[in-house]
Image 1 (cartoon, rainbow, N blue to C red):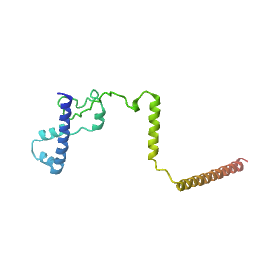
Image 2: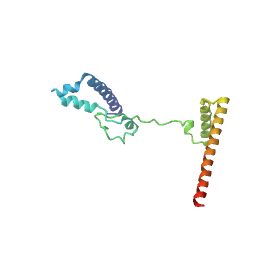
Image 3: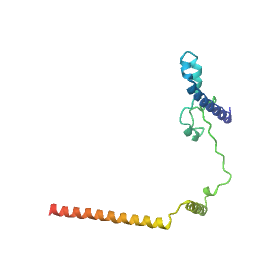
Length: 157
């Protein structure tokens, strides 16, 4: 069985299990299986078709690294897309340092065009706020320093 067939079977199984589980929750099929129907086939199929958990991490693994569910039966396996070989390196992957620097600078300019710059009035207000805060904190720390210096001189003489 080829990888494409296994991927198609896994996709069909995943879509079918999502629809079946939603229908089972709405129809109360779990209660019917407890009432005496053949629960080995219904729960066995549900367990086979039910996703086993972290599918996003599995999709990033290579097919050699995925040992869970990597059988020919296709039950619960997730298809791994193979990467195509690149024919031509793009500007971001070039080995030329000049090209990398030029690409970086063009990206910087593009990002700076997206920035919402403050108006002149806003910049003046922000600057005044920062300066007032710095002056207040300097006065506070200077007052603490002076108080501790006098306290140490009074205590130790």
